[in-house]
Image: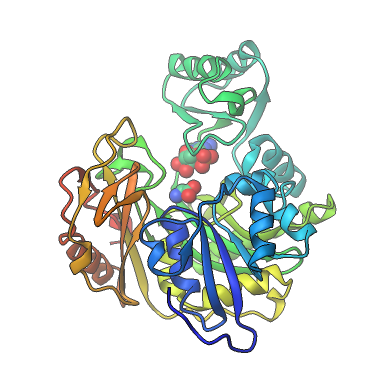
Length: 430
Ligand code: AMP
Ligand code: GLY
């Protein structure tokens, strides 16, 4: 790894995660002179170029704590939701380790849809009308009374798959039956039935230090697998930032009507939120409504945010963890970033692992173009696909259309016949 002299205030940093989001976080953090040594658990082959990857189970708080004390690590950044929902940040903070990411109690904003709905009710935040059920019959009676389209959601964490948008009554009933039959495991033991909201979706990222808020930026994901937003939902097939649909006026509205009241309600309940709050918004006729909260950066939205923020991402995450967002500032350049996800053929359904990926070694990466690894595996000198979403080809430019051209041009150099991608990332804004 790169050795730098340990300057005043330089820190040993640990990033938890292994996907494209974690790679982008590591790429940005490592550019900041405050980062002395960087560890990543478990990391991925792309991240290995930025520091040292260690095979620790990121859901095992005791193992992480042991590693953190041994090195010692000064700052831990938690990437995905699973360790947050398990309370890894609580364990670290209890040991006085500076940590970026909400407590287990606050992470319920993502791990329990019913909790979020209750908070929204108390905060009077605009969101879809809903009811919460723990048996199939009452859920179906409610669906019959509401009519379709209607949204059926497993209450707990289901890797983004526990949401069914039902166009007809039978589909809604089957979704209810499947959830109670255990399709999403314990996440579906309780079900939320929600009004279907029309509009355009955007992701709004806000940093919160328990007391102060700092709106970070916007992005738009592409959830459907196919061009023109066709086919089933995925974890996200591409993203760009900023999202013009989230105008200054609508962002202010979202802050004023949704995010500030939510954070105030969390504080009132004694569970202040510290970390990045990702508000999924549905925007119609100038009015934002909350679709969902996530308690971490979006993946692949993080990749475009990090490409635009660069080194200052570390300062912002530190200010968040230290409760100093009141003095923090973001210097946004007037630029645009776009990322295209390369996925294994078959994703989001069944797909093969292990095919060889070529072409990356000959590519030049800099602050304007980068390929983040999402699901890859190093096999000797060969890079292999090892997941559904495999690479994130990411570019930055002065306009969105130039960022799009740069990303797709870079993508042509990836030699991986077993992969596929959408050809229209950014279409809504272009
Ligand atoms: P969630 O896991 O809650 O983010 O839902 C996944 C996706 O389903 C969202 O990003 C939306 O595209 C869609 N969705 C969820 N809830 C609703 C709703 N009430 N109305 C319309 N679309 C929804
Ligand atoms: N890209 C959607 C998510 O991270 O939840």
